[in-house]
Image 1 (cartoon, rainbow over the protein chains, first blue to last red):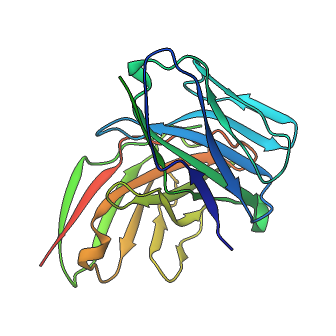
Image 2 (image 1 turned 45 degrees about the vertical axis):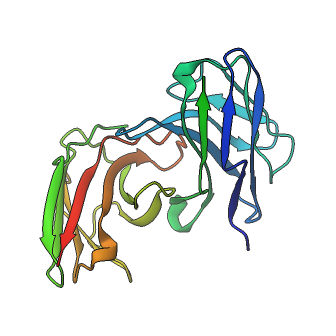
Length: 115
Length: 110
């Protein structure tokens, strides 16, 4: 299993540009999430999905779109990049374990700089 | 989900037990306590979780007080590779909206 993979690893954008961060998992997990982590801070939830065709907003959704057309993929789209979106982005997936427990598996992250 | 309070930082000697506390005084009956850690700038790694009983796995032990208002993560024999930020999170299991706080930065020293 490759687990959770994210591409690209690094990206530099100019203000106003758009792009899509890719996330894929091969564990057949129903749940997938996107977080951002600013320097010296904890992770903040952007969007999440409980299955194909279902998405919901997290703590900081503004400026980002998501869709979930397959179980495996959960791309994050930046509509018009702003310097405030400079951050490290982590994708995670999870399953329903024993007694309904959730353990999230995280990808290696995408380091995004917006100039 | 209930909020958690953790110390900002802690030190531990290599080979000794590391005890990381977490307060969650507003936890409700159906909320689990989860622990994750983040080594340097890698993605967070799941450690352990529990509801009300103490739990142990190959990585750590989780001790939850009887009133469930606080818990302690124990790394029995800390190594230099355990240096990381440790996050305590409480959440309802059917809610995938998991919120991380600032965590505790554990430094294991030789």
